[in-house]
Amino acid sequence: MDDKERVADEGVSPEGVAGAAAGGAGGAILGTVMGAALGGPIGALVGATAGTLAGAGAGYAIDFDSHEPEFRQHHESSPANARHTWEQAAPAYRYGWESYLRPEFRDKTFHQARPELHKGWTGSSDFADYEGYVEHAWQRQVASRQAGSFSQAAKE
Image 1 (cartoon, rainbow, N blue to C red):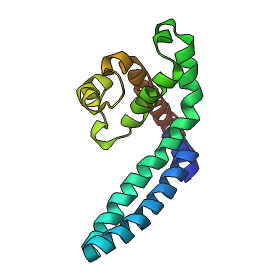
Image 2 (cartoon, rainbow, N blue to C red):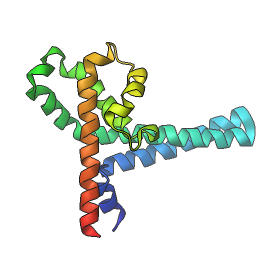
Image 3 (tube, helix red, strand yellow):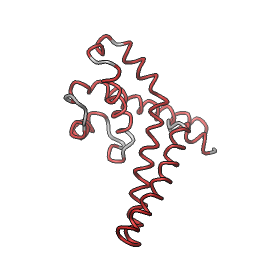
């Protein structure tokens, strides 16, 4: 199986991978330069590592953008969602989508991760007001990854 098939099976778009790679490379370069200037060789190593991780995380945000129309449609099709505009709800969808990918949430259900998600919420209103959007995006990630696992198993 080539990298494109593996990436598709894992539910990550090629754009997300490319963005993560570009962000990681850019972050590594910037981190190395800044770390070297501030802390010598050890600072360069720490800066490169931190920059790579931060840049890669930013790159995966591109993956959300490719799924945004699905979330917009979900938001517009549910009368319960009428209490928030799309502009208010979109950050919550993004938060759920991207949080699922964080290492500390691997192999956790939404309900297991919920307390940490609540603590990490930086939205302008209470987490409870936006929890439905966060959970929907989280479950969409789960479904996307499970579909990838099933298609991967069928190929083997």
